[in-house]
Amino acid sequence: MLKLNLHNYFLRHLQVMLYSLGQLWRTPAATTMTVLVIGIALALPAGLYVLLKNVEQVSSQWEEASQISLFLHHDTPDQRGKQLAEQLLTWPDINTVHYQSAKDSLAEFRQLSGLDSLLDTLPDNPLPPVIIIQPEAGQHENEALHSLLDRLQSMQEVELAKLDMEWLQRLRSINEAGERGISILAILLSLSVLLVIGNTIRLAILNRQTEIRVIKLVGGTNAFVRRPFLYTGFWYGLLGGAIAWLTLLLTLLFISGPVNRLAALYDSQFTLNWLGGQMFIALPLFGLVLGVLGAWLAVGRHLNEIEPT
Amino acid sequence: MIRFSEVYKRYPNQHEALSGLSFELDKGEMAFLTGHSGAGKSTLLKLIALIERSSHGQVWVNNQNLTRLTKWKVPYYRRKIGLVFQDHNLLHDRTVFDNVALPLIIAGENHREIGRRVRAALDKVGLLGKERSLPIALSGGEQQRVGIARAVVNRPPVLLADEPTGNLDPDLSQEIMHLFEQFNQVGVTVFIASHDLELINRMSHRQIKLNQGRLA
Image 1: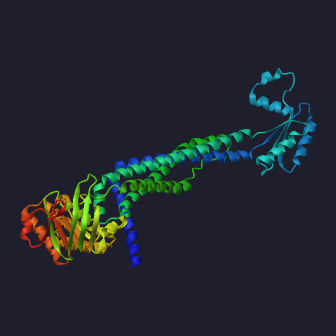
Image 2 (image 1 turned 90 degrees about the horizontal axis):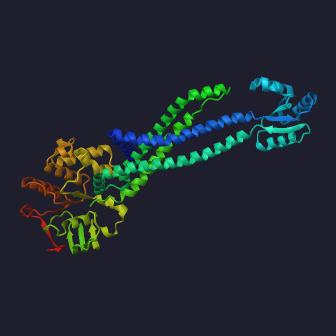
Image 3 (image 1 turned 30 degrees about the vertical axis):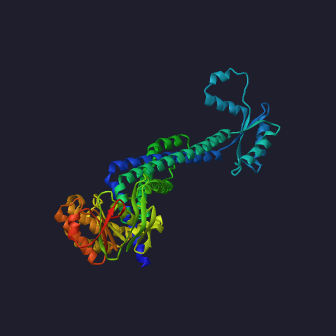
């Protein structure tokens, strides 16, 4: 008997679920508009989140490439510089070193800057010899890196030890700010989705006041009256989430060409990762939760007001 | 089956619809509730259907004290009361079958049982061929019979009707009243508010007459 009741119960839920979908299907224009609003509202924070994750991924690649430039005193002889470089190579927290004499530096600068004739007018080489150090992998945590930097700085021959990472820290701060901004945006847009669904359901309730009164007259409980509206919210949310996913897919497909070309120009292995699988679950699920919640709030507010008279 | 004991109903605008009303209806009885407009007929039926609650006094239906019934128990109570209205209260976007099936769907009956009982109820009111019609395609008398089929489909022990023949011509009214008699003959307590005295007087059932919220 209980089994039969349970069976009836699920069957009824399934019926209401399909009935709600059918109702939406019968008003395609209104449904499409609502679903699009929800979809766009969800796609925006999701898209920004994907973008942010990609920036994080790129910056972590760059972090691997963080290097220290050791500018030696001007008058350090080449021999001493090379010796120093070899000495540094034995340090456990240094991976590779590259010694670049003042002459090499000038040659490189000449090649890169194209200021040939101007450089020729200089009386002597203004550039110092440099040792470029690649820290050992795993030494990228701020503290370890800074201790290494301090030790290098305190060496007698070293004029300046510069960690080429400040820009990375700036990027990271920008990322962090972006993350918070996106969180707030996501919260606000979720709220607006909630309101859109709530308002749509409210109108549906007002349109069906007569029906609700009749249902209550023949013994319908609040739960029975509420159910189709909750499933309407469910469908709005689910379809909105699916639209958001599709919007994300198309947008990223649209920009992936140029982005990958850009990455290739920088000689990077980077390809745009759009978190498709994760978003495929997350967006519809999130939309669905918002949909049911919005419907619940709307029905809760109006259900008690509509009583048979 | 239905018992009123010193029942008062006062509306917020100070209008007193019922003043100290007491009467009793036996199980299986059929009675008419008469009186001119504004005498309190509708209010009385609304108290039985728990659409309104009394300001004072007790209402008992089927050994249940309605004054003590909590709000969330009201739906389950209403499933044991069949209600018929003057304006039918049908859902116009659903077929006759779906309208009649509504109380059974609400009660959670299974599919096969719903089909069986809806057809039995429609057969009883003589509308078996109109299952698939929309109410709008039916005449006034037919719509009222759909309303009656919906009221009796889950076999309630009490059937209430508020001016069920109000919009019908004399022949159809007679037909509808006969239908109510048939339900009464199988044991249903029937209580009908009507001001069609000519018709009522031709039928030999008890009459409860109201005048300004009291028994007249």
